[in-house]
Amino acid sequence: MPDPLVIDNRKDSLFQVDREVFTSQEVFERERELLFGPSWLYVGHESELPERNDFRTRDVGGRSIIFNRDRRGEVRVLLNTCLHRGASVCRHPAGKAKIFTCFYHGWAYRNSGELVNVPSAEDYAASPADVYGGLHTPRIESYRGFWFVNFSGDAPDLRSWLGTATYLLDLAVDQSEDGIEVLTGTHNYELHANWKLLVENSVDGYHAKSVHHTYFEMMMELGQTPPMLGDADTNGVPPAGLGTEFDNGHATLIYPGNGLPLANENVVRNLAELREKAVQRCGESYATAVFDLARNSIFFPNFVLIDLNFGMILRTIMPVAPDRTEVTSWHIAPRGLDGESLQYRIDNALTFWGPAGLATPDDVEALEQAQRGFTARNEVRWSDISKGLGKARPAANDELQMRAWWRQWNALMTGERLPREVDEFVPFDTRTPQGA
Amino acid sequence: MTAATPNAATVTRSEVEDFLFLESALLDEWRLEEWVELFTLDCTYEAPATDAPASDPGQTWSLIHDRRTMLEQRVIRLKKPEAHAEFPHSQTSRIVGNVRILDRGPDAVSVSASFLVSRMKAGKFDQYAGHYYYALVPGADGFKIRRKKAVLAHDRLAPQGKISFVL
Ligand code: FES
Ligand SMILES: [Fe+2]
Image (cartoon, rainbow over all chains, first blue to last red):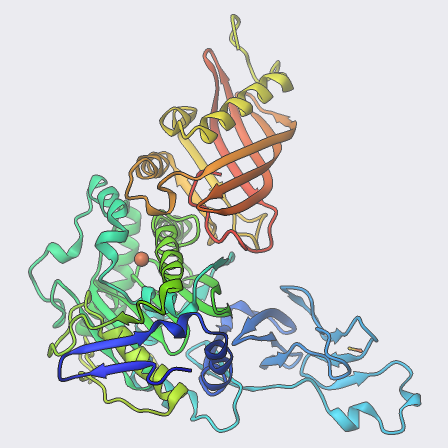
């Protein structure tokens, strides 16, 4: 691997990343160890497992896992690999099961992991259950219904890892006193580009105008003016928005909410009611942050929350190969919405996001074109992520968010710790008691 | 369709096929303004998520749920050079077959068909397979589409990754 991979030159306000990190097999494998090993990785939301014995299989951090609720109601993550010779013990994407039976030789496991049946067990001198115990169960922890897994033994607890970035999750959950739920239906698609390009893109305010020009034109045609054209601050957030960073590589860009494209009276009333209840519970300043500001956030390394308050999306970004990435996205909504409001939120989010949306395919195109461009990395070595470096308060279309993420990437990959740029910005009165 | 105004009770499969083949041709030739005129004003154009093919795109996180306004906007957008994922336009070739009339309502027929869309763009060749479900309203100047639902027979969108054109 070349050294350095990341150049953080504060003197000249220049931040550069070696393009080798987007193409190299060696970097890809080290990421699996050094990044996806010790980081807390998002697995799923509790609402996806409403009942005992519900399960969902996923690939998280390159590992095949079963995310389930066992017969006692406890949420678990089991590594989906048989202790005998490695086959998957569960091959369904979702369902209900008390027992997972490996189809290869028939070893069977309880949904809490214990190995409970081995065909012809009498042929073994030592009982496999005594030797091997049960399916590997990595460490898991949750924050307000969001479950994360950690594949290394000595990581800090989830709360410390998230630090103050927890407030980004709070603002999404606190839309309703009943919390949020993940809706049926998953976007699951691939792109032919390095996973880190989508991480950057997910918190990149700079590309919005150029890549999503047609989307903004459409919104204007339908009577929506983009909020950046306003002039008043919202809880300290200027019309141009702000970038902010947190410890451990989490970052967000905050900007004034987009108004309510195509909303009818019922939807407007429904949202006003939710907002009013939030004011009662948490105060005006907090409710303003929840309902009048929008955020694109990255939780290091690969979990994204797009929180447009009236349309919220979770996204995980998983590397498959140096130039292939699997994206999964879910829609979350406050529990108990009426059908019309729910439909509005879904449609509203769908017009932009997803592999068949009116904007996301253009992002994918940009990332695939970048990947193509990296073939010239011997001649053109560096990618530039300097925009706004040196500003006391970078705007949403600066690149602080990405630099914060890259510094954490660099720390885990090389051991070199680079200092952060700005203080965390919290767009509400933190003395207000919150739902947490 | 010609002379007598057809009604849902007398529509034949070959009339439906002719119409679906015309629709295919308009899409493959990127004649999208003409294509969108095939739809009624109260139409929907839908595609459920690949992991929930039987669910209602109106209440779930689907791939596509357009009503007339958004369908028109989709078409307007796709004709602009700044629709980066589709400029220059990809070349598509679609086969629509196994056409069946499933049901005849008072003013519309429900129809199912299979599709296979091949797409070539910038050296990349992708295929999309699945089933169409239509509600077609027969009228004096042919059918109008009240509902078009494209259900992909994929368990995830790979390797294609994006549905940037009209399915
Ligand atoms: S590999 Fe699972 S029983 Fe043999
Ligand atoms: Fe984008």
